[in-house]
Image (tube, rainbow, N blue to C red; front, side):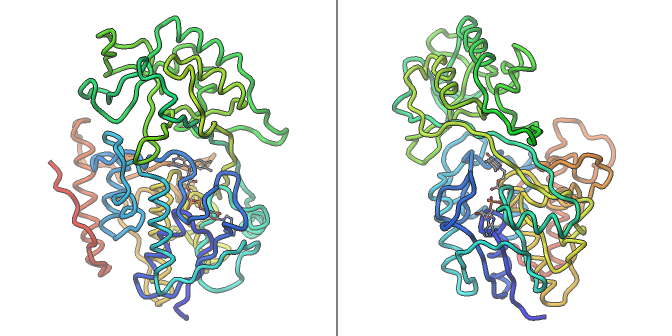
Length: 447
Ligand SMILES: Cc1cc2nc3c(=O)[nH]c(=O)nc-3n(C[C@H](O)[C@H](O)[C@H](O)COP(=O)(O)OP(=O)(O)OC[C@H]3O[C@@H](n4cnc5c(N)ncnc54)[C@H](O)[C@@H]3O)c2cc1C
């Protein structure tokens, strides 16, 4: 086999796969339809664009997504390097300046001597040649149809919703306070907008009465549980939001010395903090209704919206029925499927699957065996989810410890994260050794 790899899609998975393969000496052709055509969620001409939140979630190595980050960094992930270089304050989460993050990835791909970048849309899957398909949850229509025809399974659709962003200067700071949950009052990365019981009741009533964006007749909404629109959460009960994005726990309002009844947290979107994201406030309300309802939050009474929430399509394949364990299509084993399209959920998970496809494609092109990371690692656990044929109604999943091989014996709940992480990092290091993959970054010491 020649040593040329085609990658379709230059998002998180595509960039990660391209750099992994090129750093192993492969010639890579990366085809990305931007800037000639944008999906409904993309707007930047840069590769590696974050389409919604600027958070890559927990940075704690004892959380599942934190562990996945450490494993990726050990393997030399370019997405983890971009995140480290463009990090903005977000407590224990890893959030980035989205513009700088995408610019970092775009430059890494564009300047690599072994990567050729083509700006065009592909409508057909190639009949031959090792390929990584990484066109994401908003894969263009013709290519989606071709993939559906090839796999025979068609597509499953469900819907996520985007959270609004406000300009920081438009927030009434007399009605808000800085602080992380359980952190020192007055300090921290979150700007909290408190509501009294009365204010919450008015907000809730307006939310329940607000106009939603109508779905087209064939669209059956199946929201991802971790990213429910606020109005869907609210419809489950008057107090649901108080246990979700509006929970006031661990916060004391310096104006009253009391815990607020409810709170909306705002987090910086960019390094300078000019824009703030309403954390967990994804919504599919109409634009007019969003402005009206969100301005009932006292600190946001005069908010200027830099972006309003919206509804979007999410396309993914039914992985357990159409993918081999190494992420190649059963019907076309020269094609790997990476990223959200493969049935993982989230920025970090999408990049992680791109990383694995890049590694595996390099092995395939060099006639070497593809050996996957063990099921005790976060990377292995993520692959395990895509093989879970027992799932009747397959849904994309974020990484979580439930996907990893269970720990032997009983481990107290508080020690479980560290136990999973210790075992995973030892096993990944041994696997990398056996695969002769150099350690790009040493993992942190775990207590
Ligand atoms: C609106 C939206 C909001 C989301 N919000 C979050 C969030 O807040 N946090 C989170 O962790 N995850 C979120 N996700 C889920 C997921 O993590 C992201 O979609 C992530 O970007 C997926 O990475 P990817 O590389 O698979 O796809 P993408 O990053 O979407 O990259 C795919 C690329 O392929 C290109 N492309 C598509 N079709 C073609 C074609 N035919 N030819 C050539 N190029 C093509 C696209 O232009 C795009 O650049 C969201 C998804 C959506 C759709």
